[in-house]
Image 1: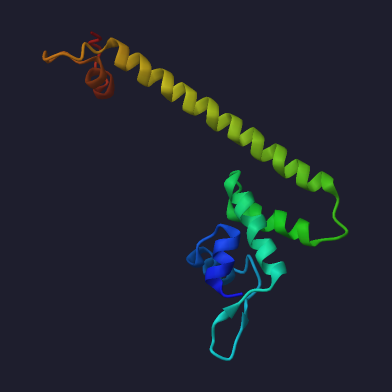
Image 2 (image 1 turned 180 degrees about the vertical axis):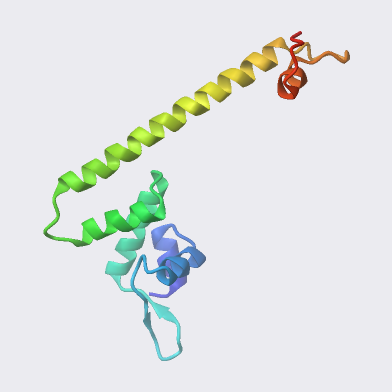
Length: 133
């Protein structure tokens, strides 16, 4: 199938597929006499695998590692599980940092009068000022 069809079936853009090929994440596509890329079903399955891995937050290096495990019939599932648990732990830390940011924003908003006056706790906080309204 052509790249546009592979893109449609995998959920990736044609540009992304070409990039994955360029960086060696996937093997080079077969080329027809006309020079067009041609993708076999196994290649599309790998593209779908990568799309799902990206959707749950794996970066390209992690995707490469997971795809290598997927391709390895002698793999041990402990390796995939440890990658997922490590990613989950990092994600939890990020969630906690985002929640802390959300708490600060809500606090600043709650202390701002939000009226036509010049006093603004938000601007004071961001300026590092001591004046809290």
